[in-house]
Structures are given as C-alpha cells and as structure tokens.
Image (cartoon, rainbow, N blue to C red; front, side):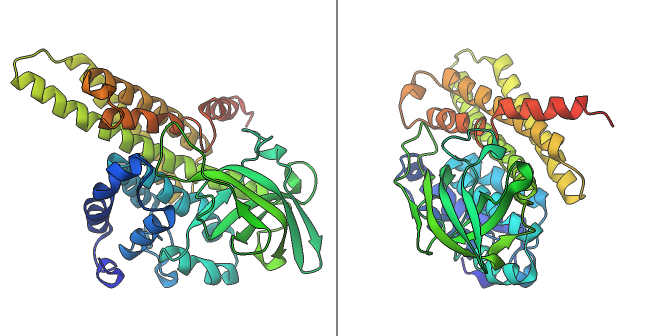
Length: 374
C-alpha cells in the first residue's frame, strides 16, 4: 500500500488494511521472534499512513485522536502483541513528548520522519537500579556550553538497538526538579545498545539496554525547560498507559476469539462447553475496552487522565491475563503446545502488567488520587 493512496482513506480503513495485509501474515513469525525488525514494522505502518496517527497532517501525520490511537493498537494486538507494543511505544512515549513539549524546530526536525515511519522512536527512562521509581534515575546530563554531556545506562527499553531516536530522561540537578528530557539520536557517538533480552513473551519486540557514554547532545535537543523532565515523563506515561490498556484489550479479544472458535467446535461435536467462564471472558474484555476508550476520550478532551489511565491500565491488564489464562484452560490440551494462539497470548499478556508502570504502581497512583485533599 502506498502512502499516497493510504492517506486518502479513512483511518478505520487504513487500520483494517494494515492488520490484514501486514500484521496477520507476520504474526506467527513475530511470536517466535523471527519476524520483521521493529524499524521495518514502523516502516510498514508509515506506508499505510499510520506511523504518525497522533501527528498533525502538516507534519506528515494522520491527525488522528487518541480514540483512533487505541482502536489501532487494539486491532493490531488482537493479531499480534509484539507488533502492537512496537507501534504503541513509537506513537505514544516515543513521539508524543515531541508533539506536546517540543518547540517548532524540534517538531520540524523529527516529527515528519517519525510520522512517515522513516525513523523509529524509543523511550529511555527505566534504569538498572531504579525499578519503578522514576525519580531515582542516575543518568547524568552535564551542561557544557551549547551542549549537554549525557552518561548513564537505561534498561528494558523497547526498540533498543533499532531505534533512531530516544526520548531520554537524565539528571541535571537533584530530586524530581532535577530531571530533564532530551531527544537523543542513536547515531551519535557514545550511544550503544546490547543484544535484545530473551523474554517470557513478546518475542518479536526488541527489549534491551541502551548505554550513553559521554554523549554530546545539543542544548537545542532538550525537551522543555531544564528540570521539567519529570513532568514530560509522567505525561508520556499517562498516554502510554492508555496505549498499553488498548494492547491488553486486543490480546484479550484475540484469546477470546480462539476460545469461542474452540467452544463452537466442541458444541458441534456434542461436547460440553463452559458457558459461564466464556461469559466472564467477554465481560472482562468489554469492560476493559470501555475503560480504555473512556481514558482516551479524556485525553482528547484535554482533561487530566492520570487516575483514569491508571484505572484502565490496572483493570485491562489484569483482565487480559485472566482471559488469556482461561483461554489456555478451555483450549486444552492443544494449548499446551508452545505455538498455540492461547499459549502465545498468555505469555504476551503478563508483560502488560509490568511495563508503563507495574500494576502495584497503578494501585498507588489510584489510591493517592482518592486520598488527595482538594
């Protein structure tokens, strides 16, 4: 599909075509870790006019809403979760900080290439010693004239080793007000990445370590004011959590699809079907979708979405694991096979409870919002 043709199609039609023509044919290979590399996934999305779904049309994007974004991620994840997380990270935490916090020069230099799928974006926040405490990061950015010298290591970075640009959080002072955000190109001297980790699931998505060894970053590549990086990171994670919620909905729907097909076969053969469990799976998936769409609508309305993004992420990802686990049980004994669709989805589902803030962190966010004195 050419970009010129795709851009004249409604977003829903582009999404349907992309899933049918690209995602579905590579889903089996992606589950084995043998599919296209992340940059090629984003390149294909760019040809379909979807690599910049949240970017303005005058910068090469589709000018879509967050409702469009979650619809896209859910549709992709229904077929393959690895492809979905590659695209989610590129679109949300990789690109959106530039959309929201970038100046005109930064938008001009980066957004068009990202929206066309020519470049892959990553988000470099998590560190080996930091865990879920984003404010404890140790990567440093020291000012040196018109540049910053960035040194440190990041881990569990989606797209590590294949991304062209990373949104990097580094310490320019102390405490939360001492964190700044930078746009760092992977081709610059001092940027390196290790081999992708071997993970429980999401085998088609590259996840690994990125090291910054005295990388000279122009001051013009700082996102927002110095010391405002924590705000950039938290805003990115709010949107990212909505995207991960959509991924969880897609995985759950895919697991449900497999289970329904299996149940119909059993019923046609005159065998008993666990209707109660099947109904629970549908209810969990439908409720997750409603929470995700609600959070996406709040982002589109310019409302504070921190609590609602956490609620959606917590519920949808827990439900996703429950649905996938039920799918494995109801598709037994075939689901004991490594490549069975239910087994693949159960392995992929677990990561959704961990990244973009663990579900323990989501519970903390929700509780603290409830206990806040207005």
